[in-house]
Length: 370
Image (tube, rainbow, N blue to C red):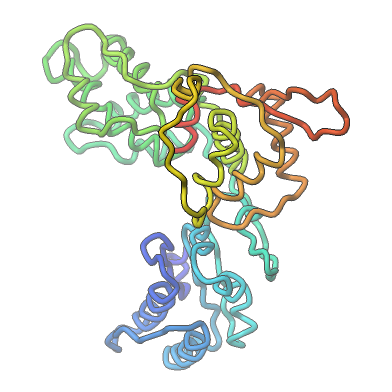
């Protein structure tokens, strides 16, 4: 959109430029490159104060005072890993620089998950809906290999979306699946057993492989080369070492951490929390004595109930950023109980707090922890 309208802009991926210094310097470099006559050079920029000063100079040098400059930060949730003042400063960049500049934050997670606790200017939030099946068909069909006709590849994309659309609407994941399975779709044509218009034979050939790929959508349990090696096997269909369909449940951000914390609380004794979740837990006394039941694996004994306070304490220790105990956290615990991923036990005593037990398997926890 910026290129056809010839709008001055800067586009930076926050994953590629993962520190505040790299990010600020890249913005200044791209701003310098707006001029074809001026040679770009890296300018040291250690603090945001330096960035504001250099930004004003660059705007004046490029004669952009009367235009709106757009700074687009892709994967903006990575700003949480930088200094605490970076995100609030970007949201007030127009005020700090007294220039006509607009900062656009692109992210796949909601604003509430990376809003800074110190407070900041609230941005205008725009939600983009998922692509419809017609849009996905049109976008994916543009990547057809030159050795095959556009109609042949469009028919393949139509089959692919018919299988995966209900389970996956992520464009990048569908592009990955399209590239991964196209060689299998072409096999009857390459061997001379069918032509490009014989869709029935082509569908019969690829149907079992698409169903097999359905087991590992998003998981990446094997590499692309390993997947192609499995596709070349002519024997019985190989069942991938995957997870059950139950593990493909989509959970909110903090619900995943709550479920992981609940699993740790259910299968680890409470006396080990200090050793596992504290950095400075002191010296551990070594004893040769061990009770008989302690030699048994906790997974064989089953999940143990735990109080709410212990669940929250483990949650705070495994989440990198600070978690505020809001009503949203407690409502997600209730949702996990409703989904039967957690079960409430021993809640008859009004004096004691609620106690829970984790009901999911280790494979389920491994899937959501990826």
